[in-house]
Image (cartoon, rainbow, N blue to C red; front, side):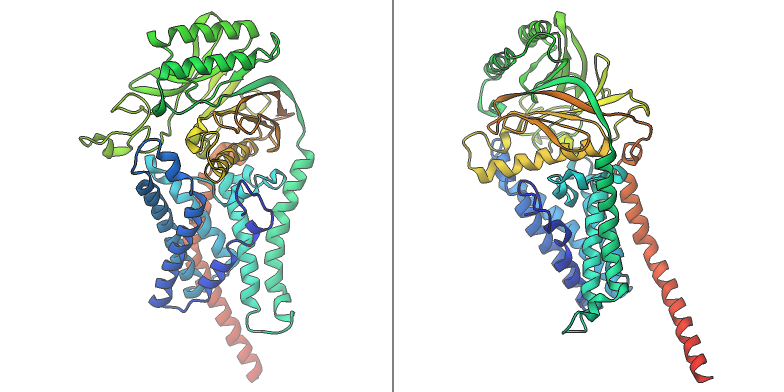
Length: 521
């Protein structure tokens, strides 16, 4: 209930407490370690199974094996949670580490590891995204991205768990729970980052930037229809929506992923390229269009279309959906192993290797295609006002449940997808614009507030002013280091924990010996 689409504020701060306290109360030795491993696995199965309930339905567009693939994803992620449970037991029960220290370090790594699996990475909706409904509390994201927010929430959970463990011997009364050693960690871990977040929200000054627009086009996925027909329908609907705009009214228009599912730089895409250029000329705007391009292989791309019919900068999708758009690593070279959708029949897409930004007039834009928004990435920009000024996310969300599908299938999945862009905007202090094919087209400011949104069914035009931070005198840490810094910090804490705990035990032993000598005198 903490994650999108529900966004309840209280659960993220207590969600891990039952599991953490249960693990900390297990017996030492192999029996306790085995139970911790099993408990972590069960936690992962329940958590990821509920979170990714939409996955089989989304992939059924492509293959009847979708339920098997979804189960494999859940089991893989649950295996990481199981390892986290084992490590947490070793630290707290075997080594005596306080829960407020051990839980955030372990949970941060549990969320970081799935993003390190190359083409099979699945960094989807960690604990930090539970606060995207309350963007005023997301300031830790500037330090280390979603992992930093998750680490903070896990630390609060650990502090509360520590409080419970400190008072477990007293069954009646509040005195055992009110010891400073028990209360202070929980209060400090909660109040410090929360106070900083509220201060950031109150003092971050914004100023108007350029006028932008995003098209919500409810078009169906490629496997269900003829691509030229789909391209014509998208162009017709796009023109109809853009007819509401006056010339020179907007500077940039974002179209959804694969809005024109043809090779825009080839002969088949020439008529559509000219039609897009004519519309861009009429509006005096630049179009960022989701289409296909030729490269070392077919590319799922976002391309700048300007007046005259020429293509400007282009970006090819780098993080392909495993099994659908491409087959990662050595598996892709095995005979008979081919992706089940996208690109050309039997070939899939190639991974883009071009520039990470697009130039749209004076603005440098960072494109993120569909689920690439879930991958933390460094956003290059200068310190004083120039450089990257906008994140754009072109997405095709009809796979997550088209219009008319049951709410339980599409609604939660789309809201989960949207939450990633909100947090990316806060991380880098830049506005973000999203154009999708099934709801979820919106504009968000650097504080994480959605300022303009299309109607819920996906058919609509979003027009608004992209708000920018007034000064860029300092870069957020995450813009320099990404989430790698947060993950390495957690890993270092775990590696140093045995040494620190050994030193603590040694000092405590010396203090106890000194006290006994003093009493004997």
